[in-house]
Structures are given as C-alpha cells and as structure tokens.
Image (cartoon, rainbow, N blue to C red; front, side, top):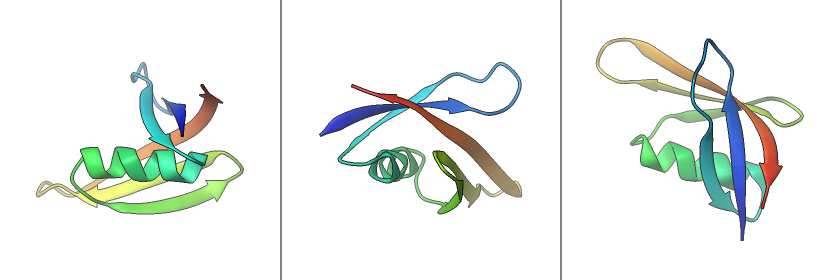
Length: 68
C-alpha cells in the first residue's frame, strides 16, 4: 500500500492523504473519511469528490502529488 498526498486546489487549503494501491484508491480513502460523495476523474492525477452535506453541493478538487 502507498500513502498518497493530494493537494486541494483552491485558496490555501491543506493537503490530504489517503492510503491505497493506486491514486484512485487514495481518493476513495479520503471519500470514506468525509462520509461519502461521488468521485470524478478530471484528468491525469486530478480528481474531484462531490457531496451534498445538507447545505448544497460541496466539492473537493484534488491533484495527486506524491506517493510514499
């Protein structure tokens, strides 16, 4: 298993980490931590997780940075 670091695209947002065999699996781990949502692949190493948290659409846009 690898630990993937994802940069959140936006203004001064913290990096997130997820563990998995692939970057997509890392995004799935992040999705589980935020209690669900839909994963969208936006391009190579770019993903979005969209969810309705009761207040409308919330979307995290992530870029895979590195694996350890």
